[in-house]
Figure 1 (cartoon, rainbow, N blue to C red):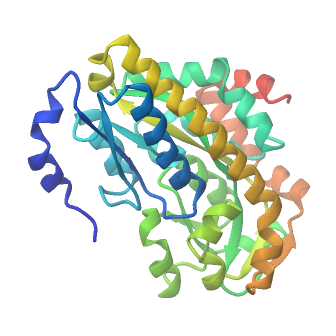
Figure 2 (cartoon, one colour; figure 1 turned 90 degrees about the vertical axis):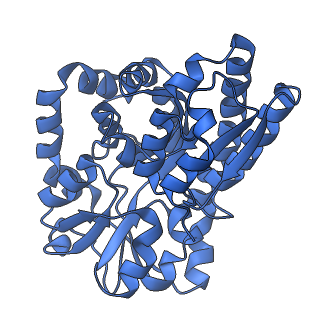
Length: 321
């Protein structure tokens, strides 16, 4: 059952104004087995040990404290402290992070991580702080593929009119509108029921999210489009973060980096290993004509390059384009 944000606010009022809190609330939206879930548990262990017991961590998983957008709002307001969140949801507060999802920007996951760990990641963090958030690091949310109830979408034309669930960020919506689909955002926790009821024809996500949410059982036709990348920004409320002493900040950064290495390795392994497991469970895979998809989404690149010329240029150079 999802906990009311107002109930959380009422029960944690003291945390909002506190420079430090004995209990750190770390919230995220994933279920057991997902790399984000595993890494959040690891983060709690590392941070608690590093702070030598001065802090404990309450890991609130599976969207128990709201969806991604609600968790970001709660972090910026001081209701919770940290959230391992989603690129799409954060782009509503920090539009620049959505540029990481430019179509076919990254050839593979290690390339994306190298870019995020460099100047581009720092530029995005600067903009996040203006929205009341401090990005402690970037975990992974994979390169995304399309699933459908009853067909593959190997060519862009196959998407015509498709009702597809996307994250709540304008980049994914722009991509699928350009491809002729009918995209609409929906909270991640609500996706399985929406697919089962026929509200959508399909959705798009990395294989690890598809598998851990059992979406391959509902939408078994999986087309390896690889159309966009998404990060998992680990974001702290800036007011809380600014009130921490340097040693505690360093503990949080250390925990984010070390748990992030685990999370990224699990995500990469899932991309390489999940296909045969999913096929055994009834999923039907097909390759996409990526050249056709790239050509069909070039206008998205052009539009964002006009709006954010400096950052798009930096991203293209860093990604090797």
